[in-house]
Image (cartoon, rainbow, N blue to C red; front, side, top):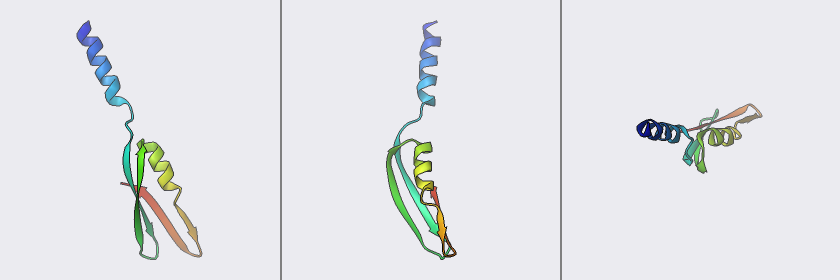
Length: 67
């Protein structure tokens, strides 16, 4: 029984989201790109923040993705 509880606790901890640093790379349709670091966030939060840089103006589009 103790082994089952220990295994369950370990499995639960391994499934939790960990915070770490992510790299956000933005690419422009005119050929440029840039990268920035998003510090101490979960993957889903970092993805949301990085995608906030997506946009278009005057025929130029910018697409941002986390690495």
